[in-house]
Length: 194
Image (cartoon, rainbow, N blue to C red):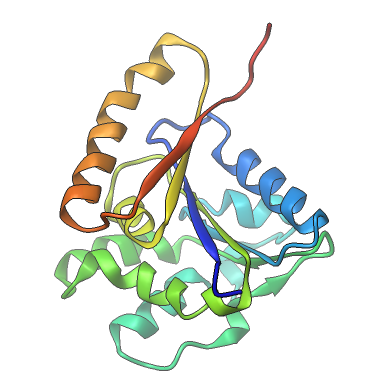
C-alpha cells in the first residue's frame, strides 16, 4: 500500500457536503476492497458523529491526541483509530481540536504536524480522506500540506462559488511554497437539482 493517496475534502464554506462526500466516497472505496482511513479534521466532529460515535468529546484519543504526540515528539498510538462496520477506519475528532488549532501557531513547522501524523499511517491504507473544517485556518492548511490532492465540494449557487476564488488562491500558494505535488482532483457539485 505504498501507493496510498491522501485526499483533502475542503471548502471554507459550511454546509456544502464535505462530510457527506467523505463518508460516501470512503464507504464506496471500501466496498471496492480498498483500505480506507477517514480523518475528521473538524472540531465539530460531524464525520465522527456521522459514523456513529455518540459523544465524541468523551473519546480518550482523537486526532488532536495524535497531533500532540507529533508536537511532543512521542510515539503515535494506534488506539485512536476506530473500526466501522462498513469497512472504513476512522480517526475521530472532538472539541479538543479547536485548542490544537489555536496552539499550532506557537509550534515549530506547524504546517507539517498533520502530515507527520498521516505519513506514519500511509503504509496501512490505499486511501486516506481528510474531512476538513469550513475555514482556511491552520487545520485546513495542515490538511492541504498532508494531501496529495483536493476535492472541493460546492453547491451550484452564487454564494458557494464566490468563495472558491479564495480557496483556489490558498491552494495555489500552498502548492508554490510548501506542497508542490498538491493537485486539484476537481470541484464536486453537490445538492444539484436539475
